[in-house]
Length: 89
Image 1: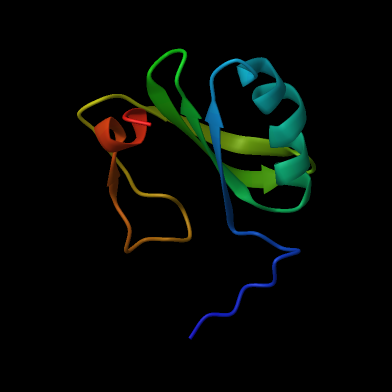
Image 2: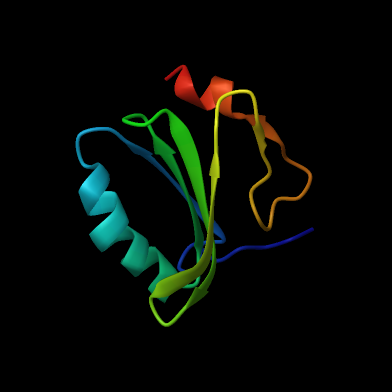
């Protein structure tokens, strides 16, 4: 069994529409500083952004997934989520 302390999240999921810029500029930096990966469900552009490998308050990699693709969040290798499902709200 894996135990995760709430002060050290592995993955944060943000659903962004009207505050997308804040999610990119402010929140993502805070999540990176605590060492968490972030998955942004970007409702504006209808994509899912997976930000990984946080170092010094920034992410070293970002991959964008489009409708028809499947997202497999880092740290949760047994989970695959279709982008279409995340866009349904």
